[in-house]
Length: 270
Image 1: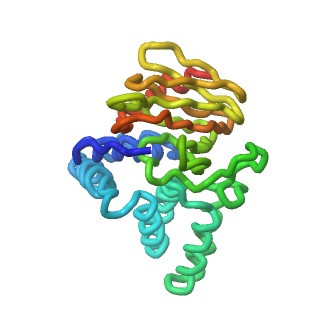
Image 2: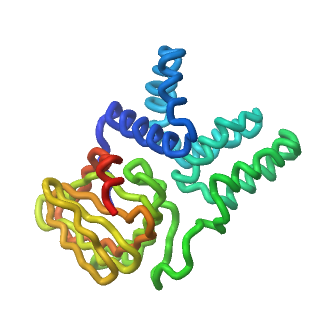
Image 3: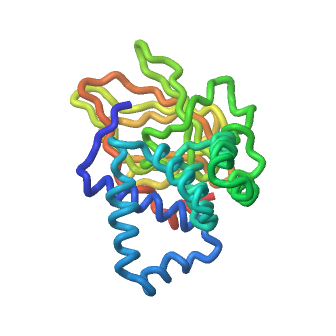
């Protein structure tokens, strides 16, 4: 799965947009985001464009997952619990597991203060709920879950997991989407051949090609995606979903990642 990288500015904008969407979903009062721009517009501009735009987009130097882990540790150490909660949400989206967060807090408690750990564990419970390990149902299918899809996290709204099933002859990957997770619009390019096949193995999914209506997918459904067709796919809001992604052999194949699926349009789907 080759990753085509756009220019620096476009990566910054995509990362900023992703971070904004994730934080807004978890703020009880969503007007807090707009209030900052009214009260301190320059600070809001620097926060958005420099911190979340330029710094967080430097994933070649340090991955989003590692940046989230470092930020969680820093905010815990400082006892900044409201900001810590927001970044626990981001860390979860970037693939940090509940057990990893608990271990971070447990170790830092010896250096930064035992009471801070007591104050943080309820926040972790609120963000992660009663999840164990990855928080994934055990009955999803016979295929392995794999690891958090951290390398492509900026192109997904929500958590996804990737497990290579076959690396020879025809590459096949098992992709798991948590409820509400979907990938950005994207295009599979190739000079010859190319495209992708999706074999649905668990849950309910949505698939849509540019200019067409969304199609609901269920276990056993197969989608043939031609080379050069702009599309997206992802889980329903209330269902985990898994599919096998089969990479059709190609010459000079690549994937172009585009804009995120519009939140309002996705919410209208069942």
